[in-house]
Amino acid sequence: TVHTATCTAPVNIATLKYWGKRDKSLNLPTNSSISVTLSQDDLRTLTSAAASADFQEDQLWLNGALESLDSPRTKACLADLRALRAAVESADASLPKLSQYHLHIVSENNFPTAAGLASSAAGFAALVSAIASLYELPQDMSELSKIARKGSGSACRSLFGGFVAWEMGALEDGLDSKAVEVAPLAHWPTMKAAILVVSDDKKDTPSTTGMQSTVATSDLFQHRIHEVVPKRFEEMKKAIVNKDFETFGELTMKDSNSFHAVCLDSYPPIFYLNDTSKKIIKLVHKLNELEGHIIAAYTFDAGPNAVIYYDEANEAKVLGTLHKYFAQVQGWDKKDASALNGGVD
Ligand code: DP6
Image 1 (cartoon, rainbow, N blue to C red):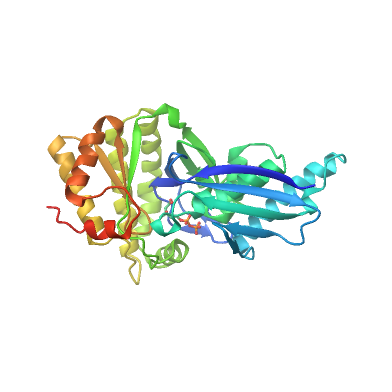
Image 2: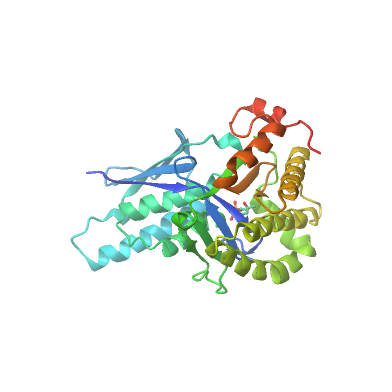
């Protein structure tokens, strides 16, 4: 017999950024973070896991290609899940010994990896969900988030839909460093996100390397993690609960800028934004200024692509403005990136 389970996990985009680790092997962060999960219809990873006494080794297929399972991150996730299953099996001798079987895992993204969107968050979240479901472990998402976190820090937030906080925790073993729900998607269903693909290059400093360098070399970083983020974390949660777009938008833009500032303050400096990213930033501020209040908010991760948050009520205005200046808002074609080089002033 082959036992199987299938799960999906969404992509999440941080509005308060995780940047810096206090423990590299456990992915324990130097600050708490907040994210918004994108709709599963648009961006998600679908993962199936199978266990059988007939399988000869653990195997993983990612978007159709066989991938190595040697990375310590994947191994840490599998070891935790097997240990939990083994505990259940030892309490109930009638259960099949799935913890002792090899696993075959098949994982597919419904968006191109080349789009420059971090796929590791949805990937590890879907991997952990699928195996937890196969092993019939309790569906406690905060518990499972601690396992996904070991795969990739930001993955812990993809166990939940909607608005999610990753509480950094204080313990050395990471048992209190977990994701919790701030509000479900249904709480604020008019919140929308547009992704502006500026470049699909993969030449940026990987986030793990980048954050290690920032922690080691940036003075500004100390100010960010001690003075800025703790206060912003509380304010942003409140803005979400109150559906206060103005405050949410302002905090989101400020935090993106703060994150890119500590990247620039790293030595040698790390640059993720390019000229097109900067034009998008200017355009959003111009639009908000003309409106007299904040109707759109940008955020950028470890690359030049923008995510723009807005309320559905302002969709025509926000997307209209972006269209006007940047020819094409959505789409994955490389030609779109060159169309984005039009002037904004
Ligand atoms: C800028 O979660 O990819 O997107 O824990 O090393 O896998 P690892 O890093 P990762 O870093 C994400 C950084 C970010 C901000 C965020 O998502 O909070």
